[in-house]
Length: 260
Length: 171
Image (cartoon, rainbow over all chains, first blue to last red; front, side, top):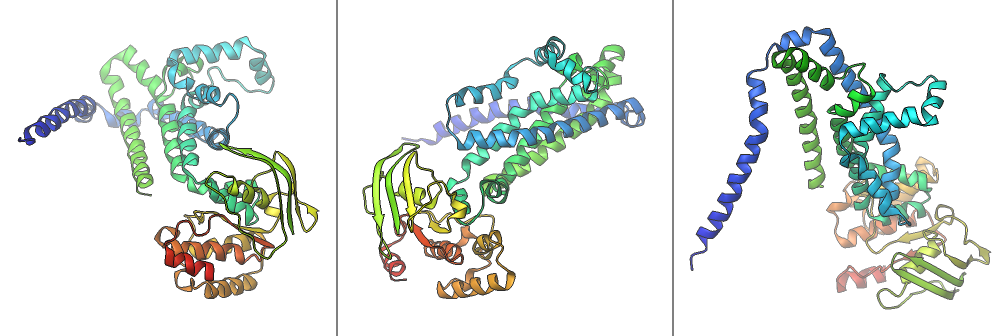
């Protein structure tokens, strides 16, 4: 019995589907690069560059905060079993499931509808139509990626490494910083890149919470609505380049992690 | 020297219940089937796990609530647990740095132990490049440089072939 034709049909059909999918992703991007519009004009456009800078600054700030709060929770979820752990893990994933505009409505309701908003205001912290509102939204949408990536990293570390470190004289905190954290370096990097990328691409929730200062995706939407494709394309191309570079770095670190 | 009184501990899927043990010898071997709780006993003595109930005494002193980092008990797990991001030299030096042992004294101890355990030639290699026997000697060196009061070895020969087992036991 000749098996080769079956393997051939199997591989060919999978290849066809894969090629269609890859083209589905790549063709619109390629078309943008071939017809980018007035890129130099976009670079000279102060409002456009400010919006890109605001996006990068807010995403960087949000990622740093996500790192600070996300790593301890990731460690707890990886190392400890407790009642309600499944619920906590589900809560962590919730922001990924909620539609973006709903996240905006939810956060706005929380700010205006609870005393927390007025407490923050008393301390001079304004979130609505403010840079920090953008940061809060980016944290909310990006943190599941941070926590899940880092948690998976901690999960893969042999607990005995931490046990030995303790018996060699290191406290739990020293063990965490000397042993556990260095070993999840790549997971922290990939989690940070994913959280950063998710935050910087957010539009729906930011439109509701903090229309100003405008982030690049918000400005792109504005320009499209007011002036059409030609006005929005150049800034969109700049954002595509930034996104591609981010994910190229992510893939590089992911590959290094697999090799280890 | 070591006494366990009514030690009970539930850890993951393992359970110890009302264990009493007294060790006064220079060395002691715990034998038991897989899953009997030998590793949990070792971890409780080392201070890695805190018993749910009961007391642990060392030289008649209650050490139950003393954390692992303060007990000065050497511990070598079954898989040796060498720190993969540190070379052999830094693995051995890890505890010396934590205990703030001076550089000259540290270098002397590392030199002596690496000669004794025949690992001088691999000091700058990383754990992933070592054989099973080399890993075990490095793990031993790492704990012996700190001159521990007692040495706790969890399944020290399980992952070695017959000839290496005999060598390790002899050493």
